[in-house]
Amino acid sequence: MKYLRRMFHWLILLSLVYFSYLLLLITLQYIPFSKDIAFLKIKSDEVQLPYYLPFFKAHVFTSFYLLLAGFTQFNPFIRNKYRQLHRFMGWSYAFILICFSAPSGLVMGYHANGGISSRLAFILLGLLWIYATVQSIRYALKKEWKKHERFMIRSYALTLSAITLRLWKYLIVAFFHPPPMDVYRIVAWLGWVLNIIVAECIIYAAENSDKKIFH
Image (tube, rainbow, N blue to C red):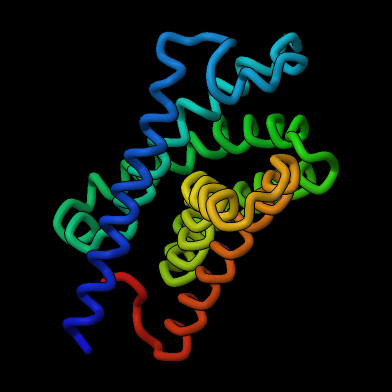
């Protein structure tokens, strides 16, 4: 059982590294910045708005950092051996998320493709993302570490939607071939709802075993 658990942890880690690498490649497409590449090609109306591109840049160029910073919060080696690094990365994660990534995500969500369903999904994601992160800070300041940890799990689960949204998109297109806008409406919800369900299952299991989730 211990061997299988270790293998599972390594599988999760390698998957995170691989898909973070793919997200980095997506981010690098916008350096040097151009309005006529990748996602922005289908947002010709939005890029004419004076505020859209600044928010887009804020979201795209901070997302990869959040994946790395969030990972340091759950890595046992960093948590136990490099506490100052753990704290610095945790505070920078919260600051960048609350001040840049989530607000810009809300703006992009308001202009999301796929109509009201997609827009509602992304706006809810942004609001829950801010809420979970603010709560994690609140409990850290009160030194209620279990509650802090649980809200950080929720926050990072929502951060990982940057990866899982794209993963589900590839799988749905590969196996079912629905119209593009239908794909967008599906992954707008599936990309983060399943993440938060998994996070709640992890929290529930830890609470019932009365053990820390990450040692």
